[in-house]
Image 1: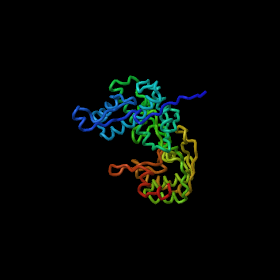
Image 2: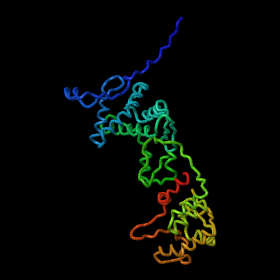
Image 3: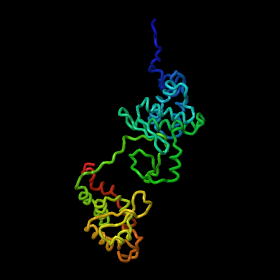
Image 4: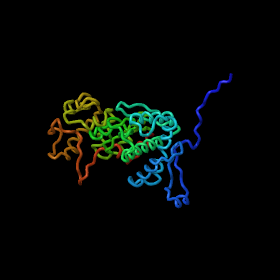
Length: 343
């Protein structure tokens, strides 16, 4: 007896959502648009064309950008209609998020892992660039924004992370590098991710700079005595930038104004719980800085003996209406130090 197994028919090149461009003659003869968007069954998908028009007419997108967005979402819509026939793009937001996860894993071969905040971290597969995945997620997010405004979709946008919006309102401070892939507010740009799927280019890895000449090289790009002193203290003590810049007169005075001071530590909530050390040469430079450069910035002209314990060690002078703040980025750009150190 011959037993045959029924195989699922392979999808041909037409069994997918697609954009059909129309000839100029046909468009003129029948007053048709530039293109028609069709679903996997060959039926018109008017929402695709309306999405394109919404991007160009109401959002100021260039036609090429609108086309890129439209083409980016069509494979996912095909995935919903062909691979998940029980689902439609109008499903509840939670179901759509599950289908997006499945699409990222099954079709794009991405790694998707949950983040403790409630959203997801997406790492692109080697066959795709991170920008390609970002384009898809951004386009789909905008499509659902359009669908909500047009009345096609009744749930909240499935790609919007509500916790991220709350973080934006609360203005939380960042605690980790952006490359870590964790979604926190970047105060410098004023932005916080509000998407459920955050794409990272790779796993963040700390890199130790093993160049023994780096401190000396870095100092060549620093001219102000205050900034040179900060650089010396950072390299000699191994303390964090915030710990050194946050030192007060009392932190050093209570350690006999020698080669050490009490500083805050990560997680100490402002308490002075860590002792940091530096060389005797740096201690002498610190004494000179407070009694000379810092005295010139103090409104009352106070030196080390007159300053209260609560006074900050490092201050910024205002000259000609401009404030010069300490900045490693400024130093490295000036001297191109990090590139020469193999970073």
